[in-house]
Image 1: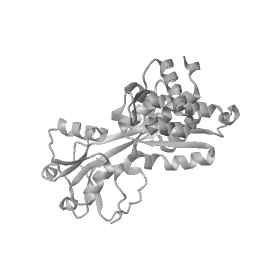
Image 2: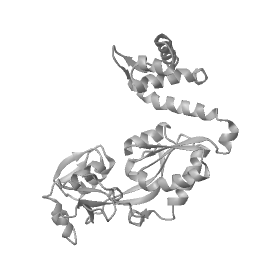
Image 3: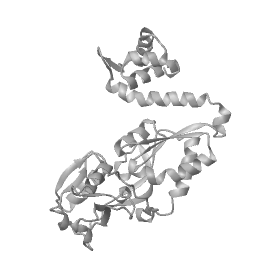
Image 4: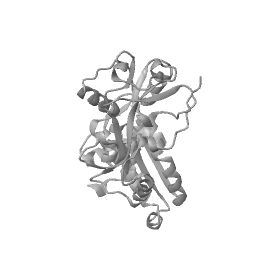
Length: 317
């Protein structure tokens, strides 16, 4: 069946899926709508599944269509890579490396490596998918990403994990908060303050809840947000405190925010390299992985406090 899949049919499906209408997709592809419809029907007949649900106004992906979309994108990318020429790929003059990275880790792990990699192989494009831990894992398993940088707690048998760094959780608070003056923070100090947490879908929240629950520690989770950056914004506004990975904190020279160590039990996450157990790594992606491991890897997993200080962001007021 695979040899009967046509590039233009896959391209037509991807455009309709991304734009949501046959009309716009047909204009983008310079096709008539009947011609575009025939291409989609041909693809669905070949796969013997329904990929799209058509309504009078919009077109939506079926569950099978949503699963097939990243595979179709991958096929297109592989096709485009193949036409760059065997010689260019063999000498790494052209190509693309796709990395699925949790947002909080992208800043630390990638810029320095990308800089060195681009100097060595300037023709290779880098595509960063800054997504959640769960989504990043899915992108690696599906093959849409060559590899990922993710949390250990989110792993599955379908991937391998190489640890790179341990990232402890800290208490984030305003510098003028009463707790900022305490030499040592106790869990009892946090029982009455308003805690800002991320949603229960987050791997960071799961790690925090599981650790506190095992110790019988109950805190006042008052606000819930989707992103760690949002929780920092609420902390800076004086709405409460947050418990989050040290990696998310700005530098020590920030004019409003500060962090304090938490008492036992220590909570920390392990960040590392995630590779699919079923998809082979391209030679181009392996070049990047080798440089990443050379830069960050060691005989022991580094602690986040050994990392270079991050420049404090200045929020507009």
